[in-house]
Length: 523
Image 1: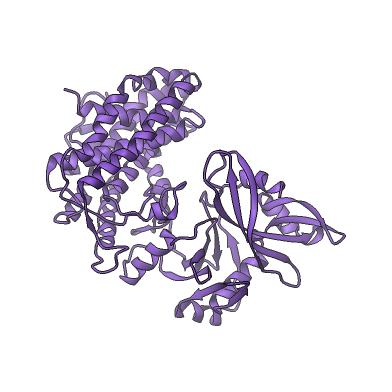
Image 2: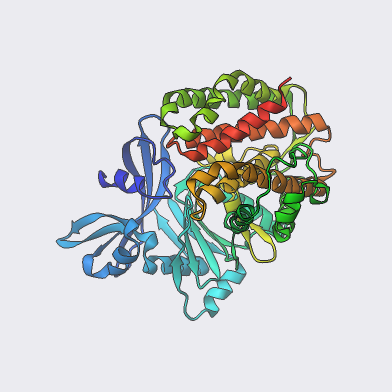
């Protein structure tokens, strides 16, 4: 359908919005109509000019204009196009935004419905607690959640959250699989699993959605720490401290604890609540990785040893992104904001050194285990409840096939990802702060680096203390330094590639990371 590419491109959950769509093709239509709605849950194959096809889920619904006022007023992003069907004028829209369809999805789950469609069955599955809730609840009200996610989330009475998977795959969904596993071993720091929706035939089951108990949380960890950062920068601006007076102490590869800091300014300025919470997050991350490494029988989850062959394959996977990002950087260099262009230009002569550092991933056989990981571990994928942290969104890296996302890795790849996330919010606290003048940004950069430097060390120290003795962390200091730096560099290259899509001042963040890592290996 000609209208679908335009709709997809403007949908936040569509992962490939920067790719040129060649055509869309309906693979499966599941009749989900009611007496008031014509609706079809649609599996849509999207073909591109220069990448492999992808599978997406849309609920194609139609209703006459007079009956879609709520949708058009509150969720205009759900409108696909105006249409005239059977002489009736109305709108073709995404039915997952429709409260009537949302409520039917919930009722079908709690009642464990089955919808037969050709040679496949759409299964709605609920655990006992959710089924009982469905029987006891008198008035269930759905509400779409306004989240910047690759999926669509629907909240029911603030009690249950249904995640509709938009991008689909015919292999096992890592988010659903990891949630079920962690629920089975009673890991306490995820929302409790309650059920799912899938499409099953004799060959495979495609996960369409997952429902969990809704967490009563204050904020995601990104916004939680950004609040501390706003107060931090306000304090810095009120004082007249010299950021260079106390040199940075410690390294990510040899992190110090808060008690070992010698920077009098930072000891006075850092909020102790933030310090304790970042320490707690480090401990909870360690417990998550220990839980994911705890399986002894299931081949999908039990830890596996690193091998030189695997280590070489890692390096091979790094080379192409490095070449591509340097090519793109050269092509788009003039589009980088002029005030930071020279800073970014410093990485031009470092391509060989970048590859040499990445090559250290197989400089010797690493005596560590690879395990299942979170896969896309960012501060926005952690919720703060007011007392503790809860992990969400185990889908893995967008853009990759489910089979790739389920591959076992070093958990230090997760650590590199969240370190990058801390780096980004340190600068976001400056760049998006309306109380900071543009001309003051450069003066605050050293303070952003200080906050990032020490908060990450506190996080890492807590993580390493809690993972002590686990075989997924190298015991040898040099091995730990190399493998963490390799994953930090991989993440920085990935972030640099993302920033080059539309260059802004944020491109400075992965640039600084690359420069700092290379500096550690300069003779």
